[in-house]
Image (cartoon, rainbow, N blue to C red; front, side, top):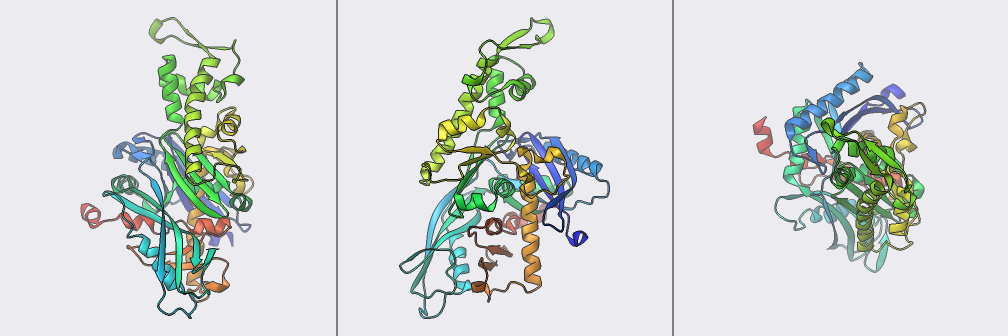
Length: 453
């Protein structure tokens, strides 16, 4: 059973690190890690590839380290995360008036509703990455999870549309291809991270997943089993490091080390009489730095990030006690001391750290249970989701004619060059995972790209 499962590789191209993780599901449905490599990231800022050559070198180093951990691996295709402050989301509403009102609503009509959303006006240079259906309505019936089998005059839905900059996406694609790899799919990073750290209960209770990376902080908000909102906040751990560097007049490497070793997100928790001694540069006198001052700088920037989170929650009307699951902090930046207390203070919601060990098999590399690998683990889970759906279609386990008997509605999409399988997100983690578009990368492969190669 185990050896029949494919090996799937997640590639997380981050601002501070690039990680490649190869995994395979065991007979219990848990991920066994077969290879792991990382490298310091150069050429990426705020989650966007700015220098393709430097990014290629970093990807290749991460791959070499992955091969070093397991020489038997062969990596050809990868699932890649996408973030950056060019990512935006908007809510839309779509309705169709049915021609034969007595017939049951069919999958074809749902497909039509979704495909119509790809015609939504967005600014020039942007591209619709994903269209995720939320609640459906049939005539006067509201909040229907799956309208197939109903009958009525008008069927409609609310949609969550995610958009991104075409050039930014193309740069990621080129960096991966020039590293000798094929991009199997692009996945929005906050959704990948969410899949790695969430369980079924979180999805139903309502949570905000806050992934604090090096260059960006990614947000995904779920309520009543539905993805309500996604956002990319253009600040992360790098900004805190730069604030320390500027505020205390130290080198960037010293600032990073101080943040990790002595940093706190709450200045009240820092000792007023504690000092860090920094060696002087080229014969200059050593510097004495107050731990309290360090915490003040970190708290100021972290509070700003959490203010953004609060702002986004207010935008979707979920800033009060409506999110029973509270805030789940993940990503490398979530390891700051006293961050849970600061988050609860600023947002007024309960908070906890989300570790990606929910889906890992026992005996995995301890390093990988750290929050900074949430995105990469989530990318492998997404890959398995695509694989399992396509297997079901091939085996005839799921057909477009038997959806009303299924727990989730499956749709075959052949719109805008995408061919894939999609399952509506309905109060289940698998449903949410299925809602992330398959074949996303095909959207951005234009003819000029093929001509250039």
